[in-house]
Image (cartoon, rainbow, N blue to C red; front, top):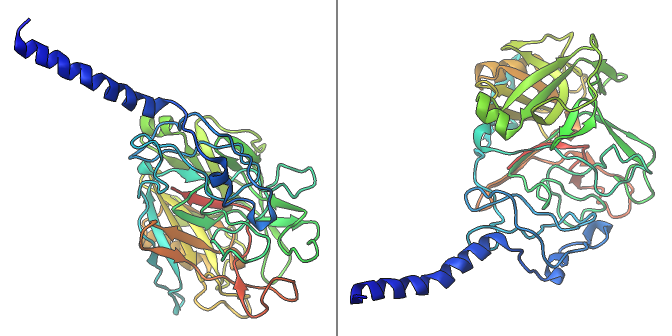
Length: 402
């Protein structure tokens, strides 16, 4: 055997252990210290996490980041460690697939609308998050309804309500408030937001799981009784279907004329409902849109363009209270909002999500930029709340992106 071949074999033998170690890093469970994982849990009055010492690696990673591999976390809403491919520990920051929101700026019958944000997201590179079951279940056995939580993180000493947008379960870069909802039951003394049960309205699907069947939307008016309005739903497809058909999402309309769907449609992974706003590039009209379509109020809307491959989110006048008689500062009517989305943001189909005090947007790039819309709720005479401070309203769910 010549000297050159001996050298090559020697080098190869030295490489084998390193190669094997690399493969092990990709495949075997990672040991962690349960005390470390539990150290951030148990706040907000929730029980501490029950954490396994090891777990299987994540699913397919993307750009050094992969989806959470859940421990048995019970109701913990704080960050969970994640496993990655490159260094054994997953980067806590998902890939930056979300543009920074920009301020809204348009006129509503001569009134400036310049409070709030709009952002368009390319769905080819984004993951849609619609919350599923509530944490914890406060529905006295009616577990089909989520418990309310905030879209925008409140400071940690705000009483009782966990924050959804940055939890380990969801980890969103961008989130807006979601569906119309109502609360059934009474507030527990001293715990303003621990409702007996929260009812989400409209066709709602979370990660392939049906949360609410198809139905009309019960929307509360600022100046009158609630109305049942025609529903608009955004369907978000599975990755496999989206890649095959070059379409990530589509609108779905319901006016009560057909038997409502009570299951998960084929190829649909997530869905969220609101009232109808824009169909095929045209405002649906004041008789269909709602609630309070002509009143200048705080609003949240979500729309699709580019064959369903772009999602546009708009929040107007967050944190501003108003009624039809006394409009919110910077608020908007639905026709003006629709025209802005059609003409300036090139939206083809859109729905209105819950508005008023529910209107919220949260964005972070995990580095140097965080955007939080203003809180709008004042809480009176409840222990732990400051009467002179405004708080973010807990909502039933949100539409998030990571």
